[in-house]
Length: 242
Image (cartoon, rainbow, N blue to C red):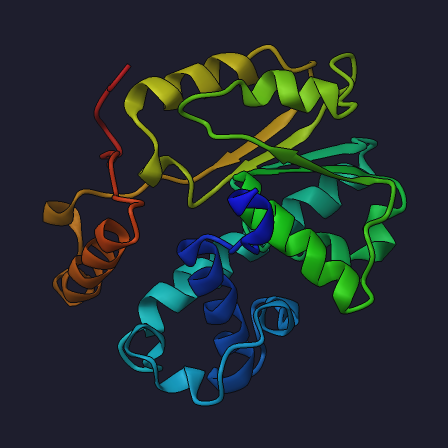
């Protein structure tokens, strides 16, 4: 009963990412890499949120750039592949992604599957309904814990069609997973239908970061540990981990 009374809350990392995307629109010069303030509307942070240490415009400039650049890369890929006939889009670790709300011109021909933790997805669905966005029939929420449950089985249960190719985005995810969970994910993705596309990002270990990026990374790691979502897996471009 206690669980039922408690309102679900989104993951801290998902919140920060959404706020960085909004910050890009609000303070960075034109042209913007991506226009996304819907996450900000969902979160509805307290006034003065831009003054939070993790939102510092100057301090987070490079990180903010990487966040919006990877988002734009993935979205351009999705639009391109939709025009080539792919009709399924899977977002691993979707967080507060707002593609489905911003790009309804594309969504009419896409089945979108957002995969993430239960609390984040429950909260997000509640906020989408409260703000009038609604949840269209082509938007599927697939709630899993990558380390303990089968996201693949849940994806199939949500109506994913194995016989059709798909676009899969996995960015901002591997950092929080064990190498075993990452390998299992890659093995499952290898069984997708021919023509499928995967966009996947990884994080460099501290020793390979530019000096100006290390202080922010140290702060991010400390915050992740305190939020019980520690950084686990890092990769270098030329090493074979598997």
